[in-house]
Length: 199
Image 1 (tube, helix red, strand yellow):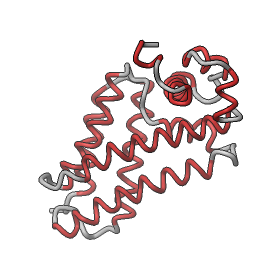
Image 2 (cartoon, one colour):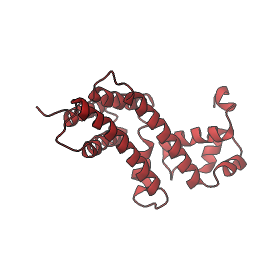
Image 3 (tube, rainbow, N blue to C red):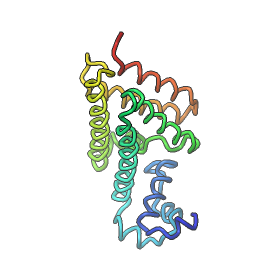
């Protein structure tokens, strides 16, 4: 822990530790004791702020989706760019964060979806809501592009958003194992291919 992190409130330190450890070890592989050790806070602080590991994980997922939403909003605001450049710029930003982390920090929502989404009634609604919010943001961006004429109009934006999100998630899942940056480059070009007007 850095000196700067040491002066953060306990709740913030716990959330940052949770993001790091859930990325590295998944939900089941992360213990409360490991989070406490990483954050450098007493056990009482953990239970005061969160009450349980499940509630803590939900708070970490909420923090993650706030970060993801902020990153998307940055590119959504770039109206000086084409819609495709906004979309691929967003994906490239995500990719660079992933690569710089040593292929660790892909997508926390995706990680939880593959680990607990199929079996947990506790986490599934939250994960579904986060994915739904993501699709809504993508759909809104694509709808603006349809109005500008640089996004294909022969498919509903909801379908295009589904395809783009599936490509993004699939790219990170594949690259977690292969660590092959070419997959990210290929998917970036595929995103362009599926959303641009057909010629």
